Length: 364
Ligand code: NAD
Ligand code: GLY
Image 1 (cartoon, protein in one colour):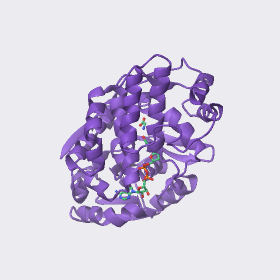
Image 2 (image 1 turned 120 degrees about the vertical axis):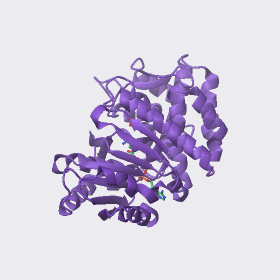
Image 3 (image 1 turned 120 degrees about the horizontal axis):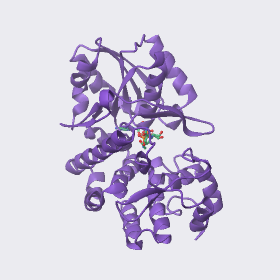
């Protein structure tokens, strides 16, 4: 088992990574609890595989628990989902000192984290992420949120978990398409500031997606270490450090909005195409070598991730896509900060380009 720490002073917390850890979560949770009781929140896909082993591990430590199984899918991260969950937690007698366990992907992690930030003015929670996206990104860093009709993740809070337990073997039941979408977020860490890791992804990405346990562990541990470092440096995204995690997200956001935030394009798939567009835009502006943009495109294409507007299933004019970008919650003072790059592993934040310039690029 490998252990990393997110260094946040008295809110620091460990991230444990190891195969089959799902069977010993109880052992790691027990020392945190003020009373031998917890509540597990999950979705029905995840419950089918992992609720029993997690429950057994709690039982082995004499920790009693109740569980709440929600519908899988993005629509659960809603006002209605939040109301049901908070009312359930209160009905279960949750106390401020308790630790609620979020067992699942980013939907469950974001919803449970937000519920725990507000129920009884805040209780603790533990992330047990079961998608690659959640294991390398959403379970770490304390961004929690629900979606509302005006947009995704618009209501939320920063609320850090007390512990993150990552068992890479849980990915063996994850649908291949979801695994690929999570892999885009792995590649992102190489593109942000780690050219050697991008080269590693080029060499080992296919093996990882094929189920190679060593490659899977290395990708998760390396990604999580990068995320922990970034969060420790800029927890609330005020210094243009954490913002780099949004590489590909502004372009991706436009593609997700255009495809209706539906199964037509998963979040990670939109990020994949968005990262290619960010590199191509940077190359078009003379900021980044064209060969670097081609390498990014070729790698994502080689593992069947969207790498262009067409492969993302979008055939819309630039002005319409740029208009979607203008609704991004990252807009500040009317300007959208873009994450661009000087080359692989050299991303930066800039407000130098207006959306009209982006629209013209998307039409070119
Ligand atoms: P998800 O939670 O919807 O999971 C995807 C699907 O996989 C679901 O059907 C789920 O039931 C199923 N599943 C999960 N684990 C499984 C397993 N091991 N075996 C079989 N099926 C499994 O999707 P996601 O991609 O994990 O998360 C997406 C969400 O994460 C979005 O709402 C996004 O906004 C959020 N997000 C948050 C952050 C953050 O920093 N908080 C970062 C990125 C994304
Ligand atoms: N997923 C982006 C962030 O955590 O900041």
